[in-house]
Length: 525
Image 1 (cartoon, rainbow, N blue to C red):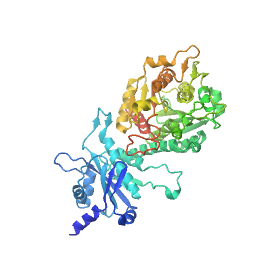
Image 2: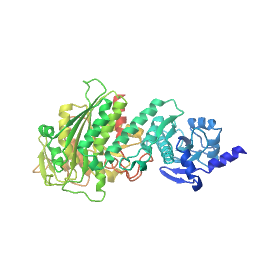
Image 3: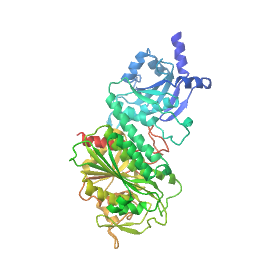
Image 4: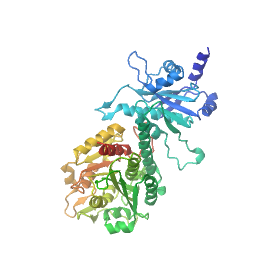
């Protein structure tokens, strides 16, 4: 009789979850009681999809917890007709004395792995989704500590949970900020994998914060200070270059974009030494426009606030290097981050202006709104000459074409080396943050040059804006393996097809974890 009453009591506190949407069946009379109890500990466990006549199965750690509570979880799963559908679950209260709430979340099919058609390790992504859904719901219930079942992929479960509970809430009153619970691994001995996942998620959360901060609170100078605060404690060298140095080095293309704003431009040189100092480094080049108004070619007022995210390329570079240092990756990484605003003024670059680059070629600025390739042109040439890298990766929000073609499904990738494309493809399939190769044909090169009065143009001819931008930058890396990542569809505000571990209408921090995974593959062959 006591067992039956306990079961009914638990059933009265069910909550139905579907990804990050929560439909609560908690009776109004018990809301305050549930809130008080949930301020302790919560736990997330996984449930595999029902197959045929076989009942849905809990994960191995879930079965251990079920044994601990005398089979109550499996009984409640049967009574509530759960089938283990991915991202759907229920929350049970008063099942265990230590854990005030237990979130049982569907993991989808058991034993699923890499899907060649989706270019995705589905099992890893399912673990991220389930951990994210459960951790976020327990966060909403007020849990101070959330224990997460490793779900056979503890690294990915840590990523999903840590990204799901993170919030950018600096500009909210302290008493209105959502509490971010402490995350702990439950039932698994693979603490190293869990810790790696937390490092990667925290790095992406850093990129989200740097990108999401309002432009008046994230000027080039403030970004530089935030970079120093993030990297120097990890043993990474950060050198801040001011206007005098920029002019002395002749980075004229960068100054053409920066001179429209009263905020002084800055260039950051970053060096992480994880192997022998004689080893040539991987060079990361991030677009760092802290606000892109479009200059004299002013962007539409609708959605203009989103262009604070034009700094997301530089933010991802900072975050990736922080992760490399935290994970002690055995490779050398250097980065160059030109930081400025693109604003309209009497000093701003005018459409049709022509500048001479460090390599002697002339570049016409037809569209001041497409400033990414312009600002990176001379810094890219400077970095190749001084840092002598073995490989160059540049990333940023460059052109709208990739957003029309790929949406938020994946980051557009252009490269002059097919082996590098395979490495990034593998990295994206593991992290769930995919990339997709786009063409870098001579066809596009002919559309940016030649012209009777200048050598190259930042706009080119025709509608393929992202391919034309890649073709322009390709002319600046004639003798080096190079990868170009355009994050215009993935690195700004999340709007469509948002995974449960990110937030709609907030900056994504993508593709930080894919870059970290690529560096890991490069270092640990």
